Image 1 (cartoon, one colour):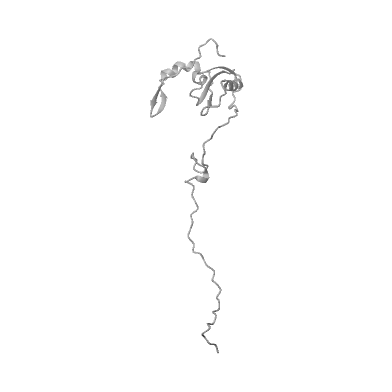
Image 2 (image 1 turned 45 degrees about the vertical axis):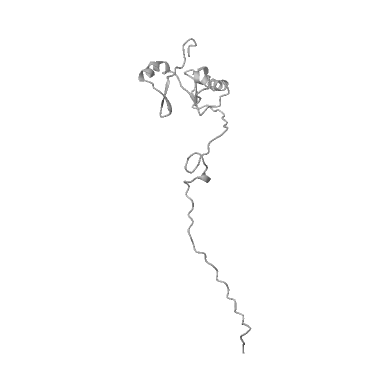
Length: 159
């Protein structure tokens, strides 16, 4: 069990930018100093681009399925950087640890993905990499027209 008087604040490392990507420089000392605290912890992340959290109630409901929600980190609380949400949950050691929690999700928009080339932005009907059937030139065979008997001309005399 987590002691409620214990300081469980999540610390953050300042970010710097490398090739347009935010990075944090973490030394092995930073990791090992926290190792003892996190050794008995289970870390769970809700992944996705901006999870649909209706306030903190939604995240708390997920936490209650797993155990007793204790606290969230600052970014989750302020709804910033929600590529994933963090929630500290007290789970008894003898509890079952589910592999997944089913959560309904609705999307305002989903990107198009081609099932042929597996690229985004188009569907299989518009795929440029899809091989089109080559058209082979074949001569058109015309049916022979029936012969029309010629009409005798008026200036020709027949015996």
